Image (cartoon, rainbow, N blue to C red; front, side, top):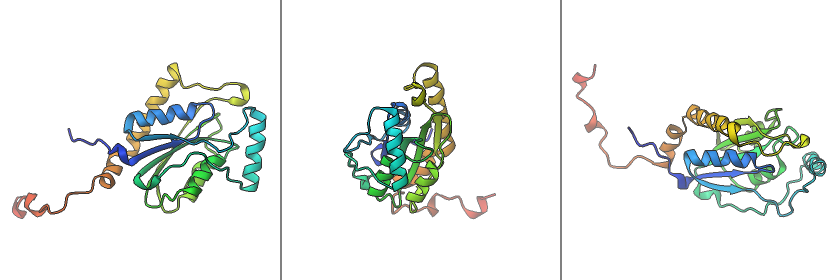
Length: 205
């Protein structure tokens, strides 16, 4: 079999996670493709109270405020960047907006993944594309996580964990992730005479 192992040193998996469900997806992705795993943290963390964070995020979305990040990442050495986040207010969470504004991902492959309370990704994937106009944004992954409003927090364990891991594997296979990334990660060697490896014209049928 052909070796299609990705160059994991060129892969970054950055994520935002409040109830650890998105973190669990990030770890599943790392298990399959390797790479560096980085959690986004704010200089001033959000409040623990659910209603308080909902109100704060709503204000930030209304005003366009981008919360300062404590996490700093040198993205220049990465070719492929997975970005993970929950759906907040049917939008991309403000901290992830901060990350995409602070970092130039031009020319990189960006792959979003998401957990939500059952209402879908909202406008989050669309906003990722808008904030990465010079990146190749691939099809994202989304799955139902917890419902913090109802007190349902971490759910990625037991049967649910097994099911979601299979979903993640199918998604990566559908993306044909190895074939898409290998040409960028491992450029062909120079100086090879391609013509010499081809059969004579008369033998090609």
